[in-house]
Length: 377
Image (cartoon, rainbow, N blue to C red; front, side, top):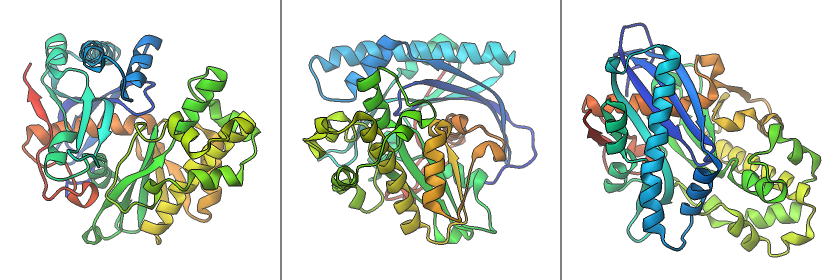
């Protein structure tokens, strides 16, 4: 297991992340040493409306996909490069000082249970290396999948490196479009596990976009105005994914408005705010059920991801978890929105050092592997 954070002088890496919520690009500047993880800077670049619409279009089967994908692959890379330039300008760091960029890319399809399992992230690393003049590591997920894994989640190895504590069992909860947990036992010999629990924000974002033309529910205010509908909630929980054993991973390919309408053909009969409240309950309860089942002695849930900004969601989560402490990663020196990008900067360093970046106990891979490809500056 990688060493925890400490004090040493390290190399500079950039991490790039755009998650399943498809709101934009988080870029972080990180100093990494043999036992240190120090955040040196962060910037956010929102997707423009056209790019966001294209990415959401590509997340589902459709017409002329290859042509649309080819163009989007280059456009995403260009915007990644713009985020890098913006970060370097803000921090005053010369690009020659950066050892590498770790680019997650934008996931547009994730099919770990297909006959031929595959995952696809776009944002051409060749273009990114050319535009930035910095070595790029990318395409992290497919090597784990080639080794029999889900290709996700990959952040748990980083979580274990910086957030594990020998005095208590912890869960790291990432709230993006999809929710995933990392179970960190006090005794690491017990094994780290992690998986996607189901939706976090993706269904709520999609529903409020359809009904109110907002991209997200600010502080969960709309969900808070509604009333949870037990019959609807029960129908949504009939989805087989929730009963599936780990390791498992999912995405908006499954949890989308088409799925919602299939699970509840009478959805038009409900008050839209009540549906939002029920979708929030689905996310909260599927997360808490997973935590209670897989981490029964958990003392602390440490949250990260954009969903931590949803105050109503976080209050509901604390209520469901009872006496378990719920906090976010701010208390550990990294803002919640910056954890995943930092993880991919860390994974880039693992790749360059020829060290494995996956945890087979999390992804289901048959063995540890070095993740990603290297695209030289």
